[in-house]
Length: 226
Image 1 (cartoon, rainbow, N blue to C red):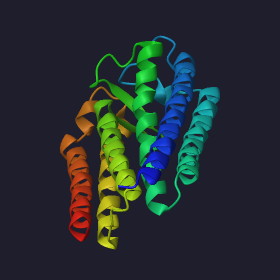
Image 2 (tube, helix red, strand yellow):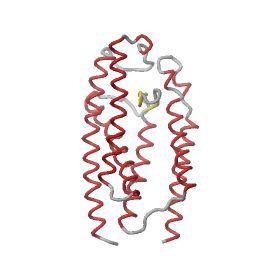
Image 3 (cartoon, rainbow, N blue to C red):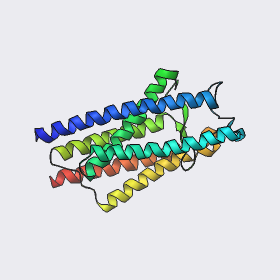
């Protein structure tokens, strides 16, 4: 092993985690304010007042969409600054997103004592349309991303980087698209009593299994090459 690169990677990874944890607090603080504005009587599903938003609330919702877009830009920018090559930047993107997302819920639990359980529903994202699912879903995806990022960075540091073919990238993109699609299926129905019926667990599971399978195959091929 090469202690120099490993030490450097560990240091950068630690800073990236600190950045993501602090960023998660900012995100959760914004949600505290938004819930006071949109749901002063309590946030719960179904979100009954969405169809009757006033002009001022619609403006705030538009601002929130812009903030979410800026969040993605910030994550990508941070990953670019932390990484020194394409593999590292991709790994840091996964790591920052994963830690940010997991600690977002940790901070909300501390600030609002929410969610009450991992199966409680949340409105996850608004671009290009609302994403909604049990909290378990983003946490599972983030946990997978955290593992992927740690393995990629470790192997890069020890001089045995994971190699991915164009086919691997296509399958990874397909897995991501399936997961996103599964999170979007219930989004348009969050104001209806049957919102849970519009979330398809098999579709979400298929995306996660495909993502994990592609990563394991890439890791196995890289080990054989080594």
